[in-house]
View 1 (tube, helix red, strand yellow):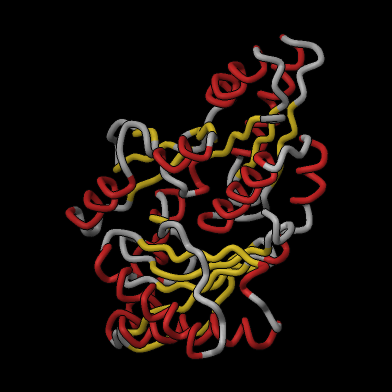
View 2 (tube, helix red, strand yellow; view 1 turned 60 degrees about the horizontal axis):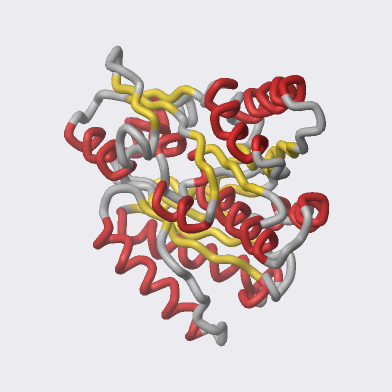
Length: 301
């Protein structure tokens, strides 16, 4: 390896997958009310946290970003070996994680003059950040230098798009995404929000009535995006993501892939689904489900 990769846990790769890729993951913290803060994917798994949310309706968890010390602990082992470091962080407009990583990099350069650390604001979140980390690992494994990999990655965040829905409007209301009246009306009418991520922010993609219709609508929006943009998925990384319900996700993902085949796309090589992590889950509740894609740097990656 010509460089080492670090990412905060909002990439939603999960601890095991990050280790398989050779990526050091720095945890966000999450807590219920005044309880102790858990380190995501270290003290508690994403599945366990979602189950706690499902078991405590009306209780809204909160998150806290990694500290500078957390990043220093992640950077030091590679720096001690003289290994350059690429750190990929959650969208800086969502969290101070990026700034904490910058502060840690500056501190480490004082400790070890000549240490090479590039901290990247991914301008992405959840599965898109994870796909960017996967792409960085692929470039690393192609023996690119840190500088070559950064240059190849810089244009990719602008190509990212997510389409998803969630089942519980109260979490969106509590997080300030929608008003109390809208949440109450939506719950009464069984309306589900369709939410997108593009150009470094969340957007409204409309509404649908009922859970099954909202998931079907997410797929339609995804297919329409592929057709409108003329996207060949062979040049992209694709991921489906979910919160707590694996069986619901299995049916959703299968429908996504069948729809792609019907539209003349090859079935993409998707290694695993993403379990959408705590940093997004505190705003969506335990029921987010959707699909995202991000362009590759090259077909070789």
